[in-house]
Length: 312
Image (cartoon, rainbow, N blue to C red):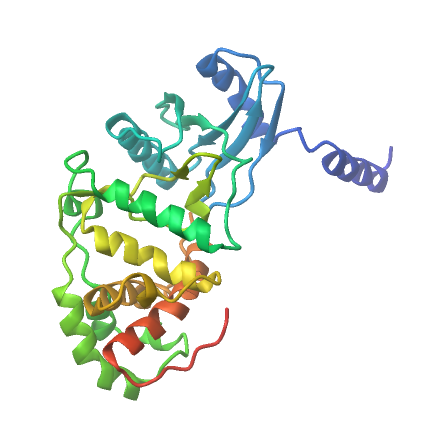
């Protein structure tokens, strides 16, 4: 078989054998089978996510499971942190933990398969109400994890970062330096009023790709950033992405919260214009999308001059 026909044959195999994992994934199968105690009959890659972690749906004769394996230092660290949270926090709002193995080059986390659940968007009023009810129930739990400062470290607030180096934010083209000079005093003032500490369980990465709705519960995934923190701030971080996906504006859910609007918008303003993260190249795009709704939120809340926004 000459080169061109060999190439076409390989393409045919790839297009017509969706259950055949890549070689690195195949190497994981014996470890997965040992962890779950069953033969894996098929294994399909899961699209999505913002890091290069391996994500698979593995099917056995009796059930299917979601598997996530580390592939880089960043993804391995995140998996270990997520597994630590699963060992400390339990509830119907979390996926069932099937197995965990902390392996140095590639730790493996095996969870229940939620691929058949509802994964918004699009959003309905019923779905939003269900998610809000479950977030409120989570936030009523206390004392289960480490505090915000321990998990997230001492971060300079976002608008303070922008004030120190405005170019990455200005490069996005939403505002100019004149706008920033007029708006910064109020943004810095209200941002400084927002506290990140607290005693309540918080997820700290609530977005549509991290939650789903089954027949009887709302389930949140990717718990590696969870900590004890300010519950209103945790909720506030969901609202820009919800608005971007066609949901209500943030102030319809959290009215009269200028400090939350300032802190959240500052977080995205300080990061959306930075260079891509090698281990998570899609993060900056998502941050720009959330800034597109977070910036108008803080503008409306603090009565700031309007900004020029273009749908990303």
